[in-house]
Amino acid sequence: MTTLAAAPARSHPAVDEAIGLAREASTLGSTASILGWDQETMMPPGGLEHRARQLAQLARLAHGMSTDPRLGDALARAAEAVQALPETHPDRVNVRELRRDHDKATKLPARLVEELASTASVAQHEWAEARKASDFARFRPWLEKIVRLNREKADCFGWDRAGGERWDALADSFEPGCTARYVEGVFVPLRARLQPMLDAITAAKRRPDGSFNDHAMDIDGQERFARFVSGALGFDFARGRLDRSTHPFCGGSHCNDVRMTSRYSERCLLDGLGSTMHETGHGMYEQGLDPAWIGTPMGEAVSLSIHESQSRLWENQVGRSLPFCRWARSQMPEHFGGAADRFTAEQVYEAANVVEPGFIRVDADEATYNMHVMVRFELERAMISRDLDVKDLPGEWNRLYKDYLGLTVPDDRRGCLQDVHWSGGMIGYFPTYTLGTLYAAQFFETAREAIPGLDEGFAKGEFRQLLGWLNGGIHRHGRRWLSADLCVQVTGKPLSADPFIRHLEAKLGPMYGI
Ligand code: ZN
Image: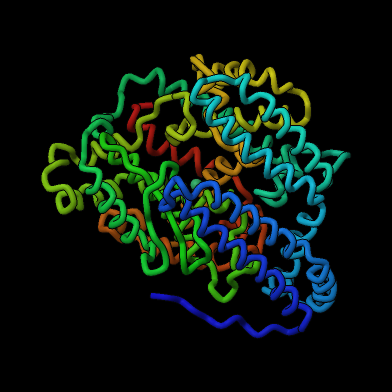
């Protein structure tokens, strides 16, 4: 069903004017997003060169629109007009958040924006080649340049020289209000609780049965099954698509046109199913945004961590639970005939929850994943503050992997060259993965209290109540609150690692006999 609603009447012409101008920039940005999706899914390789030109031109135009002095003027007048409204009134939220976006955009000189974009596009290519050859020396000058430009960017944005650091200004673009000190305050105690759990798991005598992770299933059948599960969770295929790409992602142009991708591996159904459920969580957040506010902050996601909380919740709290595995297993004969007959639901559940420290972040299980993120946070923070020279990155990376995960990294391909983020100029991004993981656990605990029989419902394929709860508590509010305040609104408490630790202990305790 297509949801269309008229924008609510607004009170002041300056608010209308500011929103009108911001919507033009946002509409152009959403066009670029569809071209980006097309590039990853449909475009023939021959289209690449001209597509880069199309995207660069759209980015330039959109930047011009979002830094338009007319927008700044309209926002100044609108700010006065909304002053008397409650802080969470949609007009006041839109004016406040548009001001934040406009200020950020205008603080960066066009020269720096272009240099960052052109450096990132070459650096990504150089990184891909360096990774293939496991050759850090090839990537090093590009990373040095990216770090230098990002330091300059942080200085343009401005940062708290009394108690903060440059990294804070960079993280703010992904996670408004986030600082290194805040992240450290979450990560240090989290690690202190994860480490003994991982040590106990490593020493445990009981191991879960992982045999379902090495069992060939028809790839086309897997894709049909993933699509079926995504729809059962609540993804609306009349307002979105699911296609294949090398790296799964969720994009699209707005809440009524959401484009997700996934990938499937012949020998492990749970790989493709897990990544599809993850992207479905992102996709249902996008579909749950209020259509009346398309192209304005009230119709946008709060932050990357809250976005990630939605994907992790469906992937981990739902998808890796025994009731879900019971339901999923019961649906397999219809999609795969007898191909999964020799596996019980309990075996599927155990396979979904094997804990195994490894080198690669994107392959990591729930218990070790956050260690990968902590290592990256420490390193990027040190590179930006100049405590770490880029040339020493591989050695420091390897030292931390030994320290956090007890692993000896064999080469830079499986070490500091594995992630695309830094080559794309994204510094300050990684912690949002772990913050999102913690938000997911806290939101889910609250949902469990609010919805009687939630878990039992999963075993019967009932997911709509959970989606409705997330929709009403989180999705429909757009950027009304910052992440930390939204968490208090939804759960009554500030973010804590406790629910996540409880979630792991309840599951891994019996599975590993610890
Ligand atoms: Zn994600």
